[in-house]
View 1: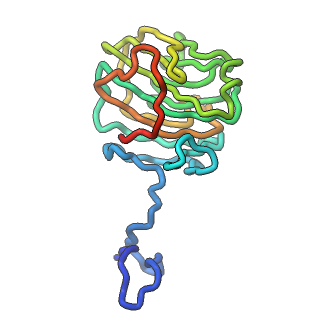
View 2: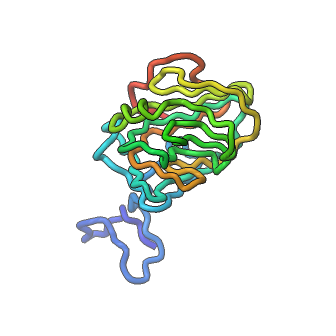
View 3: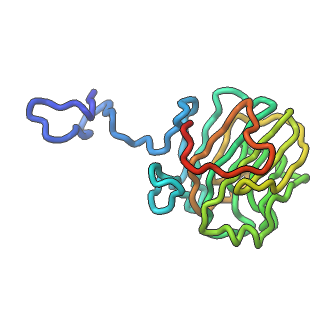
Length: 217
């Protein structure tokens, strides 16, 4: 058992894994971090952190290469009647094969017929949020997306602080959220930063100014 920050008298560098090493701590490989400390993040595929494209220069974004590259986490408790899910997204290109995120296959956000839609169980109804031309215009830029639910069945979707869609939908929400892919295998090609899930509060109910700094938690 070794501690990568432990230095011996003759130590000139942190310890590294050698033959028969059973545990080596402080190797800083947990590169996608849950600042709230309530969820374990699991990476799939070649999801990596990136400093090439990022909204805030003080933290890294995650890069999704468009081939089953996503990460997922399970919330510590079910979402209540009111909640908010928000994030910054920068997609490289837009087509009918873009999945931004979903609630473990139950509901999701992605492209259907190239439109940005919120879908329910993979079947109609599908709620259009942005048209193809609008999504093309956003390519290569950072845009803020927020989904709020109030009262258990009233939803509102915002892009860059503008209300772009509202609908009523009943049904439970999975505690597992997947970022960068949806249940159809549609993949995001691009970057995501500062994903925040707020349980018990619809942070936005009308047009607002998008966050001007990284989230604290």
